[in-house]
Amino acid sequence: MSNIAVLYLVRNNPVESLGLLQRFLVSYKQFPSGLEHDLIIIFKGFEDDQDLLQKHVEYLQNFRYQSILIDDFGFDHRTYFSAIKQYKTKYYCLLNSFTRILDSDWLFKLYSNLTKSGVGIVGVTGSYESQYTNIIGEPDVTPEKLEKHKKYFNPYPSYHIRSTGYMISADTINNLKLPRFVTKMDSYRFESGKDSLTNQIFRMGLDALVVDKNGVGYQKENWAESETFRYRWQDNLLIADKHTQIYQNMDLTEKKRIAFHTWRKEF
Image (cartoon, rainbow, N blue to C red; front, side, top):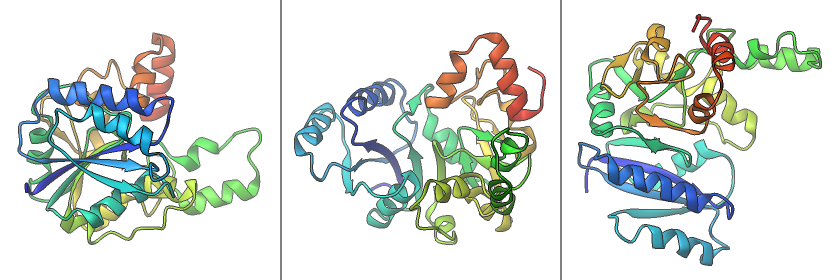
């Protein structure tokens, strides 16, 4: 058993989950991690669908892995931490269903930055977007909604590591205050709220780094310059996800608009 676990989430979705798993596994095989680890496949919501579960398992027959079955309740954060309770180790790399590895030694690059002194979390992307600032000026926003978002979210810049792909230690996890993750708002708040995963780590006196495909770790003030998420061409992205792909497919005009919205920087 390694002291590092890579947890990949497979959600029961008859339309796309098989394709997403296959795409992830192709990238996982193509790009060596650079570090010994245990691959843990989290199957979420398959308790009543054994036929579909078996189809997923068939894709994995040539891979060394362990699986954890989680019921289809709550959101991704709850699923990850439920799996972590079942699989004890020292470090966890958490990857959502849409992730696709883009470069070799990806796990080594994350781990070597996470284990630097004073670092509490590393991610493949980060953002400054604020749920509160985003709704200011919306034509249909109510005073009640605005006040609720002001209570739960910091204004821009709201520094947060995006949960699509990140690495964290068990020691840090044990010091987190976790919500129940019952509502979508619970997940939003844990992602980028005042009591988010990243903000809790900042309050521990630890840093949050974005790591690019060259293995460089960026402090929060320089996340845009990492060119990993919604900035320029995302050329340094280490692991792709659904939203990095959406940005990649935009035309130049839309890229410039989204980049400025995310970072307040010209393209």
